Image (tube, rainbow, N blue to C red):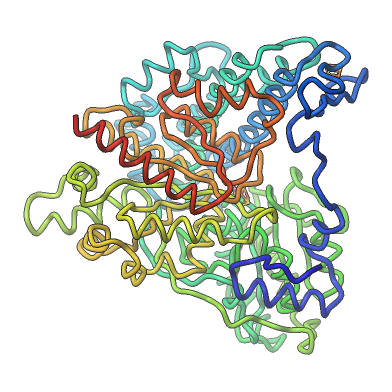
Length: 630
Ligand code: BF8
Ligand code: SF4
């Protein structure tokens, strides 16, 4: 590994050095060995959809192979590959949503899972058109779960679109025929249409991708968030800390990594179990320190203030601290490198989901029916492993930062109302926020979301962009690993208002919020969609008329591709800080970064330089403002 700067985060840099000293490898070492990425794959020009191939189209137009054996052109191959990314991303989010719906279906008064937020249950039942009068709460919960599960496979009709979608937008989707049918059906439709010898038209494939992505954004993800709130509570503002410095020298450190809160919620509960705490004493530790990583970390951080150990590119580094007794994972964004790395330390790497078994892991299957017992078994393993910690191998970095998190939409409204209350009646809506946007006190809003990617200096783009936005009076909402980057950099602390422009700083002070609002996991981008839609409705406009944009500065996953598509389909311009594998097709690039705007009123921008992207976003926001004023 050379000494080029790999990260903007001090703790990360320190642990990359420790990895070197310890002789263990990380993602950055493997990146070096990999050398340059495959030029065909990078441009999306490789097709292996049938056994006549694999075929690859020359990246130089007019030179070498211009068609696959079947005659598929670069446009066809690139758009098919992209559509499959959307289908995979939609599957991941939506299958997560489905699991949570199954958990709601088994919720009971005395069971492991109950209903924490009755008000939310009633709200969701109402939006789904389910009768709520005189119903037992658990019967209602089961009915909501059944309705949700039916959205995945119903044979007829369309997805139930949430009322937060402005009427104009809904009509536009109908006109374009991109209102999803059943969630699973849209994924299958892409898999079918991208099979060899089926759809061979880039524009149609992209239209199809928009419909499938909407099934994610307003189906799987949307219900995933709603039902998680019903089961585990709608987040409220709370303070916490972030970065690897949250690990403790004298406690049993457990890292929760993955996505589905069904597991992580139970582990948080089990870590308070009297019997286990007794065992902690017996092994000579001072307590159990449960910390989070990636999106399941976000889930428990939002609802319990559980500290965040780090984001996506720090998963190996957590093990390399030598201070972690167990990394407990469920699904998604988990490096298969972890079991081997854990072997080099005393860390137990525990998989729990039949959907994500990993060779070399200790597998303790998490059974929702006996969730608490399963969680206890997992925590017990971690406690018993404390004695194996080798103090000489331990290095816990000093870096950690304060963060205020938990900004669900209800919490945002409550904060807005608290202030307004002193003057006029609380509105129970986002009206004060909409007023700030129209008056220009806030110039606009930006969602900074998504992953880390070693193609970029870890966290740097996200932090630069966020700082530039808030300095220009643009409020930031964040989710996923981007929100964690912000937390580590201190941008989720109320103090960060000193970095904000005058308008935003005043709003932050009045409303008692940080300039960057942590809205949850990536699935919770549904909260951002709801917020944008409700503000648009208050102003009597469509989403695309608002001075609002989105950016995934360091994205890497197929889920991010699905998100990008549903955000653009929702009318919100979206910047990608990593170039997607589409550059092999001028047609696909032209549709996504240009012509799609005629369809849905928003488009993609591809810009790897964070400062250039920031300038473009500000320009676009100001353009929208001028149009809104007319
Ligand atoms: O769903 S931001 S690296 S953790 S994919 Fe993964 Fe990306 Fe992180 Fe969450 Ni989202
Ligand atoms: Fe090649 Fe066409 Fe088969 Fe793809 S589908 S591998 S382009 S022959």
